[in-house]
Image (cartoon, rainbow, N blue to C red; front, side):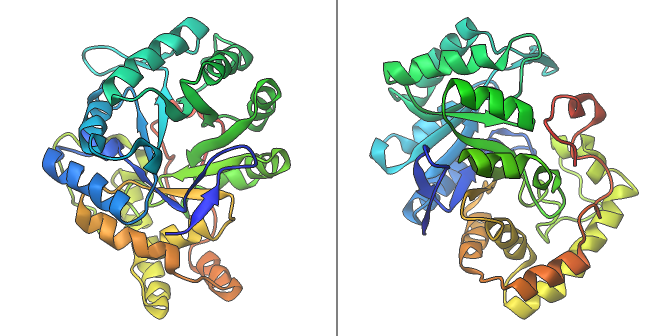
Amino acid sequence: MQTRNLGSTGPATSELGLGAMGMSGAYGAADRAESIATVHAALDAGVTLIDTGDFYAMGHNELLLAEALRDRDREDYQLSVKFGALSAPDGIPRGYDGRPEAVRNSLAYTLTRLGTDHVDIYRPARLDPNVPVEDTVGAIAELVEAGHVRHVGLSEVDAETIRRAHAVHPIADLQIEYSLLSRAVEDEILPVLRELGIGLTAYGVLGRGLISGHWSADRSVPGDHRVLSPRFSSGNVEHNLSLVEALRPVAAVKGCTVAQLAIAWVAAQGEDIVALVGARSRERLAEALPAARVPLTVEDLVEIDRVLPRGSARGDRYPSAFMADLGVGN
């Protein structure tokens, strides 16, 4: 596993990271033992960046990671943590809280659940419309000064917000959805990141499994939140899966799977991009990791763009109620 730097001020991490959200039920019931074994397998393979959120199953994910990481050297991995997303007991989202006092309180709970004295990258999950981003970032900067946080990150914000936040404290990276199905970041956000020396951590690189090569239109899993996504809805999902079929011959020529091709495409968009792989089983992890070694030539990238042009996907990447919280659309 090679390393990449997250921007000019961020840490050096593995070129692929592990996204842990799916280990806490977002995509249906998860196997706790298998999830822990997957974290161990990722670390043993050289993955150092692990991404979580304090609101993933309301702390469950952080507690799971604490168990998985208990016997590992803390300096051998980096924890990227999102905070600020609010929820009611019924699971209904209740907005975001970016107030400085909430930032400090959230981190205190996170450090306790994770069983660590610091997190490597701390970021608001979304912009709180009622709190200036300068105030939120300023509070994280104080935690950096105190040694509880090592780097400041952002998630799903627009170019203007990135500039305002970076003026308060150097931003290591922006976490945002980036895949063959979601390329809006290429217009304004990616150029601003590169101008300011900020890295990009890409999540959803397989479109939440849609372009993994393993999804089927009739798939139904109790508790899987993807049923709410417009891209997985009837009519849209069939079209989107046809895009996957168009990728299969390209993958075959490269001697890889569709999932590996999709991950390799994201990684090929720049050395300042780290792709998060949302594997929650060792089988899926084992398929994803070789993607870092799939060489894509200029001709390969042109061919991929030909068979799956930007804007080909049908449906928004989030339900309509959540689209307003995003820095960019699709």
